[in-house]
Length: 132
Image (cartoon, rainbow, N blue to C red; front, side):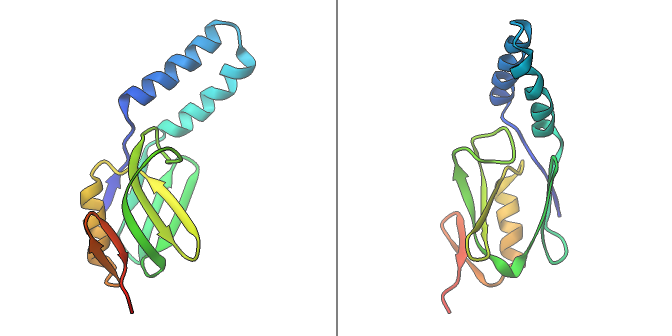
């Protein structure tokens, strides 16, 4: 199943206003490089859970995470997302890897991963690795 990404409108507005202010103030050496970065953040995002794993397409980031290596899926807050949003979904996989994404329907995304990952069990809103 394919899930579209989302951006918080207020976050986009603040970033756009800051960039425009720098450009109009003549600070082209700061505002100019921010334009392509802003464009990449606004690039349409997709998260596909069909097949063998989760395929993430966000801007220039294309990542594939097999279902069997996922150790945690759950809501997360804070920065470091691949989108202009403060809350999203955290996916931990492998020994020490993590990616934070922001699907438009986070609950449906987590439920879909739960159906496809029998090694994960639900603990509240999170999916965690089942004890052996």
